Length: 129
Figure 1 (spheres, rainbow, N blue to C red):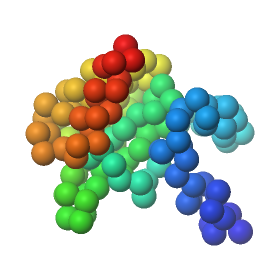
Figure 2: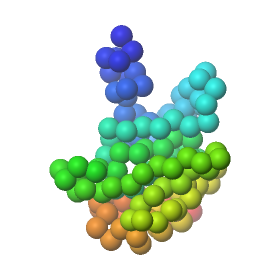
Figure 3: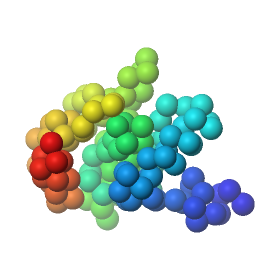
Figure 4: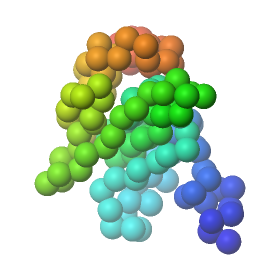
């Protein structure tokens, strides 16, 4: 059953956790099959911000809103095909087709209490650019 399969779209966390090189072909196949531009994922908290992956094709929107994960609230706004993160009362355009480094640095500046995972991701992206 689709809703119970460990590798189904409701439970599979590979798009949030696996290296992008391992999942890129799968992402493109899913987008093509469903004729959509983006995959929006929840239930995988990590960085405290809305995280674009795969050149913005996949958005991880579980920011860890519950107190257990640090109360990191954010919202995804989609207007006129533009993706925007609402974080700390600010609107920050989500990058598509390019590195998310500048976007993540901006959100980190807005959110000094962000999880350490965000800082590590920014450091890794800065080294690879």
